[in-house]
Amino acid sequence: MKVYFDNAATTPMAPEVITFMAEHMNNLFGNPSSVHGFGRPVRSAIEKARKKIASYVNAQPGEIFFMSGGTEADNFVLIQSVLSLGIKRIITSPIEHHAVEHTVRYIERMGWAKAEWLSVDEKGNISLAELEEKLKSGPLALVSLMHANNEIATMLPLEEAALLCKKYQALFHSDTVQTMGHYTFDLQKIPVDFITASAHKFHGPKGVGFLFVRKGIGLQPFIHGGSQERNMRGGTENVLGILGMEKAMDLAYENLTQHREHILSLKHGMMKGLLEKIPQVRFNGETDPGRSLYTVLNVSLPTEKLDQEMFLFNLDIAGIAASAGSACSSGSQTGSHVLSAIGIPQGYVPVRFSFSRYNNAEEVEYVINKIVEILKINTANVEPSAPKS
Ligand SMILES: Cc1ncc(COP(=O)(O)O)c(C=O)c1O
Image (cartoon, rainbow, N blue to C red; front, side, top):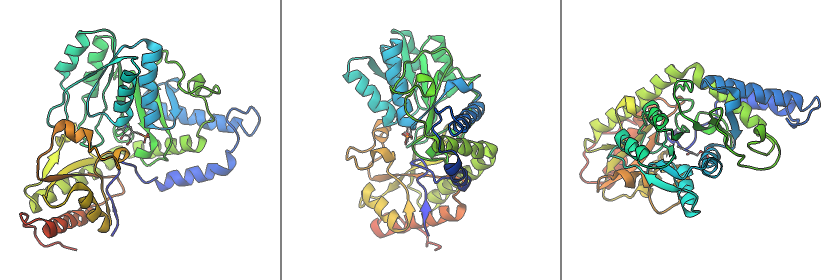
């Protein structure tokens, strides 16, 4: 059996997305900037996608900018807020994705702005009181806080944080890469200034995403070249990627509740099954369903004998794809900055499992049994029940 429980790293493309993109590969090859009959339909397909995507988050089409994904969009917001809006202070958290964290550190190294780091509790929650204290006591700031953490699932109270930023006239960016396509957004109600999204996290293609910039905020272009994306991002558009993202958004939002219930039942089934068979198991990050991203479960498994790499290797041999945390930091020997920030217990190995609508309960059971087997072979202090398969 092969089980893919690494959907926070990337999701498989929906078959409907693949069909949609394939259909357009032939007939929409013109350059969207060409004014002839091959270019015009491509331009109108892009603008239709922009309109549709904007409607899903209740934004205006002119507030949506297509780009190469979450990393570029995060870089764009942070760097251009500092360079073109005169921001001198960035308030952020130590558990942001590297696309934000490393960019903030780069901005500091360049001497463009100062970073202020909020503290997080043992579940990765920030304190809104601390945010307010910081907002009160300094010059105009950009606040950058992710909607949901990709490693430990902890979610930010987006609306409350946005309202606080508005109260103190700070700009507010939220990296919504893990929540776009999985939660609804009403950007007319939530006063966030920038959000960033990436299609491959919701069964769309890789290398495409979007940035929402609230109307009236005058960011300067990030990539210079042609006049694409209303002069904000030069370069011929990733046409098929944009269309694939549009289709992936359609599929995500048409059946959001159904997908959410299904995925949540897998996550809860996994928690319950693990607790039954391995009572010492711990869950990292927020697990309260109202404040925890339903696609992600970060588990600490009791073993002194296996390190994380060996544990994942054992899972891989059993056909199970899970991860250490952020896929973008795999290969780095420094460990997860997120788990370091919240602290995890000694004698345990942290593993992230992340689910999608294409997973099922049988897979959950298989994975639990394999975990038990791996621990049984390698650890004396676990008394698992017999695996079923
Ligand atoms: C929270 C978060 N932000 C940003 C990114 C980067 O997105 P992309 O892979 O589209 O560059 C990721 C991807 O892992 C992510 O999980």
